[in-house]
Image (cartoon, rainbow, N blue to C red):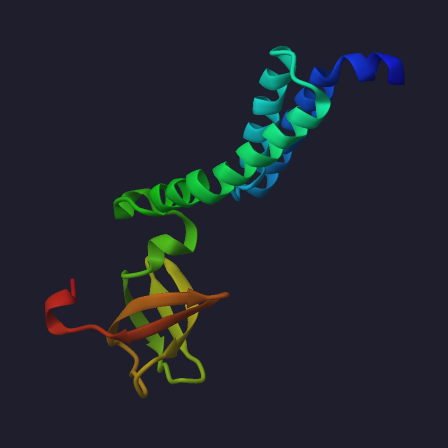
Length: 153
């Protein structure tokens, strides 16, 4: 087994790539896919006839370059885009909400879309029936500010 692996390092690099791809699918952090890119580069180096030490150097250099140069650009492109493409709680930021129970710096309830959320105000107490804007989400709590007349529906 070890004799075969010693002459077929490509199998190790392919296994590392597949493991990184599976971990990336679970984490979605764009980190392990960069390591997978390094392992593919090492696989190509193995097929080109490079020694094991050179394959390891290729893996390290390509992985570090991808983490340092490609990942920040990819993350920036993933995070920008129109509101329609935002998902989960990111989609709620900037939405108008209706105060159900008065909201203060310590708590309250607002209705965002069709859901009732716990909320905190950034400026004083907001009375029931007021329209507010969601500025951010912290856990399961919406942080809201009063809506101006122009932004009300």
